[in-house]
Image (tube, rainbow, N blue to C red; front, side, top):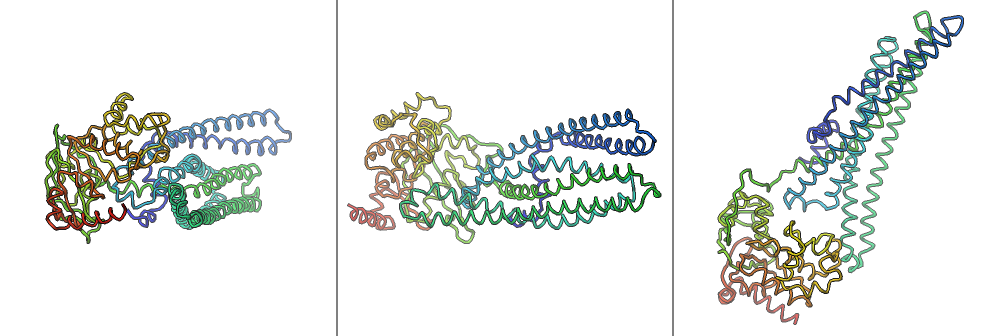
Length: 592
């Protein structure tokens, strides 16, 4: 669903959809509304008691009946206390439903984000995606905690007050009703402006979070190239745009709230004026007028609250619309309804008539078919943009083919449960991502239930004990955010240990040794050899020294598999690989 389409759907429709998507928000809502109505009905005792005291006990007798005044006052006091307790129960129930429902919505949004295609998530800045499950849902939380409560109780109070007015004085009630209708029409017009303003605010918040997140995560590069001033200017521009949007929206909200004050004053003045002019001859006693003014206050006070709530509602509606755009994004890669298990033992790989494109008018692969024998060590090479990285993403099911199928062990990946696939096939990227925890916990991502002893055995099997001994805390050494406290080579060693402990039958590597520190190169290559041995492996090779050691090389050129064979055979063939290898040797010689 496009942003424009979702914005047009309106705040009320968006909030209604949020209730549909999150049933916990409306759980027990009927009883909550009953409590809100009951609390408001009990409040009607107060103006009735006041009218009785004024007309009968103060003005209707020669002498004030103190006992009668006290008894009616006590009845009003008890009614107010009871109304408070009943309405408090409504507030507690609504707050509980709000907290539960929005927690579910936050989790659901996060889960949906994780299931979306990499193409979708990479098309948005990370900060903007984080805003979906933080500030956008926080805006809904604010509305539900305060605006939602005011809306529920306010609407109940307005309805009850209006009915009571019609019973008390039909003529005065019509004056009030006419004012309410005119003011409501004005509010409908203003809320459309507010809706667009709050949409801009949520958009600016996402942009500023994205700019700040990028500036923080890219700090080493920013400093390396002396781009601090330019980066600060970009962040400042994003924050200024956010401030300007928020300020304009706040001004609109303030104007709206001021209009509610004006409405309250005009309605009150009109009622007093008509009541005084009408006088006793038309049955307008002092008690009746004062009681009616209490009812006006009972009506006006929630209307003022509702007007303020409207501002919160627009902010919440903007947040809901942004979240719905995520939830409405189709999940392109999902688990099958009836998964097929991958067979035990060594696994071969097949690409059967695979076609894939990022843009419909620019196909990358067309009818690609190939077979890789189980246990074969394969290197994939080609110029930048030739399709080698996409080949690895199709094999690891980061992408699904547009046509055809990728099979592992004779089973199409689309028929395999994700957990089963990840247990049998591991991917080691060019630079392994590490989480802000310890070395042990990062290795454990390959096998969540692995014990510390199993992790030590994995480190020993990969012959990394001497490297680990140099770490200040051994396995408990913190790696920092994104592994920033380790060198690039050390991060790669952790990624290799993570893949080893997973025990996969197929390994897909994106030149996992290309960013290795010279001091760790021997250990890394030895660990790689141990990791690959006895498994089917596919390595996207950026350096052709990796391809030399492969059993077979796949050469891609603009999405077409143009050559395949051993290193020696391909060098002798005088084709694409020969040219690639010659350029690589020349480049290596220049470096040396």
